[in-house]
Amino acid sequence: MHDCHKDFFHTKGLKNTPTRDWVYHTLTHKALTAEDVYLALLKQKKKIVFSTIYRILEQFSEHGITERLFLDNENKTRYQLKEEHDDHVHQLICTQCHEVVNLSTCPVEGLTQDIQKASNFKIVYHQLRFYGLCQKCRA
Amino acid sequence: MHDCHKDFFHTKGLKNTPTRDWVYHTLTHKALTAEDVYLALLKQKKKIVFSTIYRILEQFSEHGITERLFLDNENKTRYQLKEEHDDHVHQLICTQCHEVVNLSTCPVEGLTQDIQKASNFKIVYHQLRFYGLCQKCRA
DNA sequence: GTAGATGCAAATTTTTTGCATTTAG
DNA sequence: CTAAATGCAAAAAATTTGCATCTAC
Image (cartoon, rainbow over all chains, first blue to last red; front, side, top):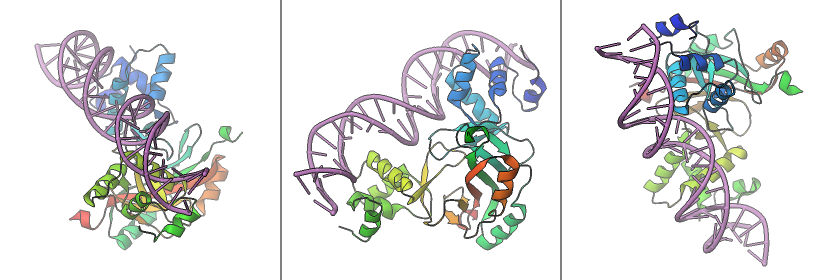
């Protein structure tokens, strides 16, 4: 069995199982639905059921391995690999192929304090998302 | 029958019906689910079915009257009144009561061009959302 | 009168749950 | 050996659709 992420899973308190490994390897910089993952694994002849996929993806999200994303015109959850280090989100999202590019800098860092003061909200995190078409999908 | 929004609906090509008016009056600065709307109207003894609510909310969203919003920990669509004028979104959202405060300024206006150039994306719109607890919910 | 709106019931889609069995550590 | 993970089937939750009837204009 694959064990290239054995330690990685173990540090999260997760067992290193084949299904978990398959799902993990399916995830990319694109934001995938549970069905996308299912179909990708089906194509590779990996047998897995939807409930397992959902359970794994939800665990991944709880442990900060993945992140949930919703697009405005569909009623389903997409999951994308999450950058380890930070809890706020700055990304470019292609609305056609669902590729996600993480922005390295936080352009609104300084703003949070100001807005917090002005609004009386206790701000916990923020998301800055730019939507559009990636280079490929512009064709 | 209410007709305070008669002209408003007509300019959108929508008939001025009681149900549409009820749903419209239910919407606020909070982001509500279809069920929230249903329950609010039930409480006012207004009889309406879910399919009608969904149809109206989707129409409102198509016509820019409302806007869809997803929270990270629930799998359902929320609808909020949308500011007429702009297509991008800058808001403060209370994760507990779902109050939404629209920010008047766009703090990332200048950035879009830069990111577009650096990324080769054709950026169509963006969303900047700060999540936290509003003054009431902090108590 | 007619296009659009609604109610109702049924279907679809997405996600979750219970439980018996299996497996990683 | 034990807690966690999986498969399977069934249920639940959210949303959509078809169609007959009704209503705004």
